[in-house]
Length: 308
Image (cartoon, rainbow, N blue to C red; front, side, top):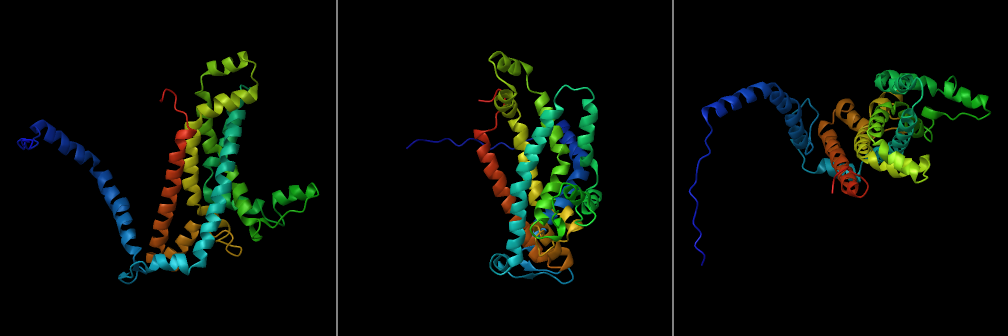
């Protein structure tokens, strides 16, 4: 047998100056630590516990085990409806927003006189408050007096009902989301301006045109930016709430009852806080799985300069 000699245990000791610096550092970050514990850590732990209870805020929570989750998956049709609406919105709005954002960034990356003004104009919708922009779009999408149907009628095209038609309500909100691509467009633009010009010059020497530059130089070089915007856009789309709450309240016929709106209704309208906590944790798992899938696929299409 091999004789293994046990090393003597030594207690880790800090010098007096190290302990003093540690105390000072903890004192400086104590406001953040208290805020994190009170407003983030405790609510997360409490919501996980409440998801296994029947809790209406007014009375003490009653333990029900997995009943909330079982009811969600087997008896709650609105749960599946809201999940379908959310996936529908995410699948269409996120890719369209990325395409429009990249296209706008490519146009605004051109060397044209007065480009700073154009960039400001396209970015302005991003800083408009969400509620104000929702009210504006409610007027624009009005089937009777809305400007969008007015333009369509002038072209001889009958305008749809938009927000009052179940078939057009989600496409209307997707179209509205494209109005606010200025934020992601600015990030794409920053990534494009960081691409070395020597790469474009080499394509020109080889006889390449603008499409070759965009396909083989621009897109690979800004792939980390695309990856970031994809993750953030996907997380935001899964939590889509404000516009639907202001504009439709989930109607017509639950066609815009998105997951976060259904969660909000259960928590603050019906006071089913335990049920809403279960909804929240399911949403967390869905977002986590979707994010992990994108992360695992990123090794095949995201290029980091200098990485091996």
